[in-house]
Length: 372
Image 1 (cartoon, rainbow, N blue to C red):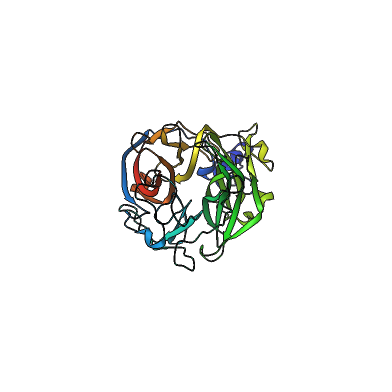
Image 2 (image 1 turned 120 degrees about the vertical axis):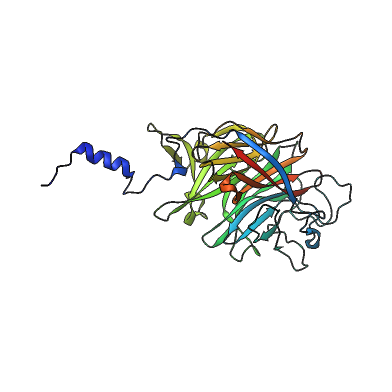
């Protein structure tokens, strides 16, 4: 005998299977429903190794890199690219901060080292015809016109590498910068040569100058790239944008998080001026990844006390309280804490990240353990 199924039962089955727009479960990374904050802080902060400079195991002076900073990471297959900011050749031993011979606005190293526990061994760097680390994106190097072009982060997409960068007009007071614009560059030959995409630019006074991207692939195989973004400088909050991977070169297809609708679902606007701030803090050099141990998003950035870490229940939040990761008292002159979810241990409980130190003006490799 056939059994009748009422509307209530059908509704229940649809809810349990998470059917939305033709099927598929809600990606746990894209919803805050049923979650609460669980990150209590970190322990075990350790400087594991040095990545760049004469004192590093990589001896990057052989590439003409005596001093550099940043070190954001993007992975493509078994290779991870480390992207650096203003880079210099020989420097006086007493040199503090940026400066030296052979100034290049940006350089890039690469590594197939998959074991973060003992530091990062670089396989090499992208080189010019003189066998020194190549300037990937040129700059005028004229103050109040274009002082430099700094890559803020990158990713592999559509078989290419992409670099998001900011054109800095002038370095102002500490932590305050004047930007001409933020832009996008593309490489189709594993970083050796780069083409600036002139049709993809954000205004210099916008909140979308420094970015941290992360790709999220749905069950149907479509991929969106989420970008957590801040203005030029270190004194403003975080806003969010996204774009389909296949449309990454089309500025018109970027969408900006503009709050939630009456049902609590995110609103995505084509107008960047509609964007809402999702983390209200003084944020510098941010980095965001999905963490398998917490099953939460984690964000690191330079804050008022040093480098801090927050957890997010969805890309747009809510975002939890800031916990000290490294303080200025521990490492004066620290900045640029960049993560890559490829480099973790203990199921994501231990995270590894790059960190710049202004005094030696080089990039170091650190680790810390998450507590929940």
